[in-house]
Length: 462
Image (tube, rainbow, N blue to C red; front, side, top):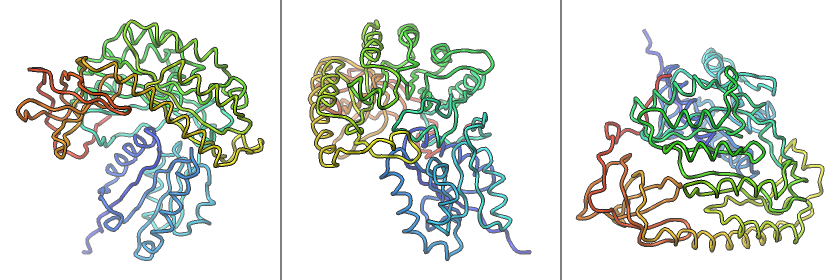
């Protein structure tokens, strides 16, 4: 009797934390279907690319990768395109890359088991392309988590904001929230499995509304922070339109909630914000910043900014630069505008040359670098708690991350060994724009949870 061939898969992920966590859930789904994950395309029978289409370069990278490995299809390998590019391009992907067998948008991941069965039965092409009408969230029986101490929980999927530059509402569907009961149950299971840090995810995480109890985001955030065994809770990404004072009050009230808020502004000009269809003005955004700065503990603030949006003039750009000074961000993710399919901004003439976009981006990034240097310098002499993430033997330093999400590289006395996932008190001795340097405070290292120190990933049963 012939032995059934082993089912193996390789997955590569492009884009944001939502995609990273989606891949963890996709991996868990495949493992439950009897597949084994391998580390190279050459070993795999099924090769999956979980894609991002926020930026044109991310999208093109996927198609270049598919073209590079076209010859592998002749070896009997199957290819699948998942995520935002899959939803955006749909069956046109089969025209651009005929060797692809699976095209599945993120809103259709729950259908992956059935799609895999069709491919295994000999079907050449299958698609999963839900439109904005779906009310389903992707909750799997197993999630394969790549970090044994820090894990993600998606609490809301999709987007209803329709910003002029953004493709997400068209690729991830409408906003749909999980019940708070299911989120809290997942958090408890993670705590029982040894996780101490949780990050709540959503395209607009603070737009969350419990479909069964009408519980708002700040209530859920506080409840997760009170789960026994959870030491840190982060969340991303917030939208200013739905950012309430109650979120800051929750951070003040619940010690486990991290001293960090990511609040994308996109532009410092109210005129450009109107063109972007952000539906708030600079003054309203700064009101929310004032709430954050009035908190009882210092909260790190980060943001996203787009330069060179159609219609942005030099005065608008100067207003964005002045916003950097006024807020004093601890980090900024900045990008040049690039047109995306199906977005309202396509009706505008993209009149700003790429060279000018690049100049503005460089000016903004240099100003932000100086601001971060000043902000980080204030930490010198402080003792901060870090979660230990690893060790850099070349530098003889341990790598840690603070509650404010700042990287703190530090040395331990007499070569003391620390455990990944443990917490330590570190005295800051130096500051750079993107990191801090310090030394372990005497007798401060804790015994970390180390049962999974050498594991690459593990599954968490729902």
